[in-house]
Amino acid sequence: MYRILRKEKLAPGIWLMKVMAPFVARRAMPGQFIILRVKEGGERIPLTIADYDRQEGWVTIIFQEVGLTTRLLAKLNEGDGILDFVGPLGRASELDGLKRVLCIGGGVGVAPLYPQVKYLWEKGTSVDVIVGARSKEYLILEKEIRGICNNLYITTDDGSYGRKGFVSDVLKELLDQGNVYDRVIAIGPLIMMKVVSEITKQYNVPTVVSMNPIMVDGTGMCGGCRVTVGGEVRYACVDGPDFDGHLVDFDEAMRRQRMYREEEQHICKLMEKEGL
Image (tube, rainbow, N blue to C red):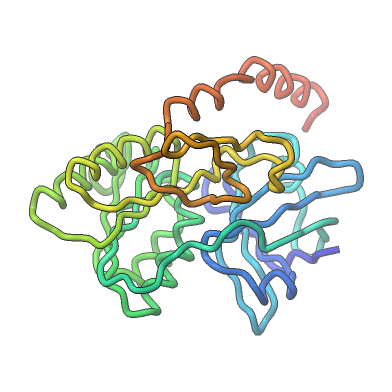
């Protein structure tokens, strides 16, 4: 069992857990993820590694309660154990050799963005960050990111904190002002990454997006994370999760993401009846 060292509520339905997993922490790199199973007979789900400490042997995950497994996971407390915690999986983000980077995170996508910002900052890279949230109460990791970047821009959909609007609004302004970046890194909802990639393509700024929102099995066996990149089929869990944002077919990915919406709603209703 992998013991939970720390549990913290970051926002409504969003939790941080620090888990004792020395073998995972030993090899973890920004961009990679783990597969966990809460209990025997439970489903396996992928969660991106949000932080790690090689010496102390812990790994941090941040997740949102959206399905059965994440709801069961949220019921666990400090001192409890997680049955399976496998990783690190996926290809690590390529972050070396960059001088100036703009990192953009939306919603829970700020969690996997954080270790990339931290890595870049520790390497001496100039880092600007744009973070977007639905409202102030859903904003996560502001304090942590503010201390490891040159400039932090915050947007909220309702204007309750920072600037009212979207991360794409700030992105366009920064590029219009003549800011030059070696790379833009965007992690968040598919529609957000699509809009960001469309803007950066106009300015010829290399852009990397993380397709972790579509991962399911995490081993390339189920095909659920299939994505078309540059006209070729790739699998986010084994070929990614990072891809060239200018080559990803986001429209196809979003259609597939909506494919089982009715079934998901049906399962959620059943879960509510069971008190989960």
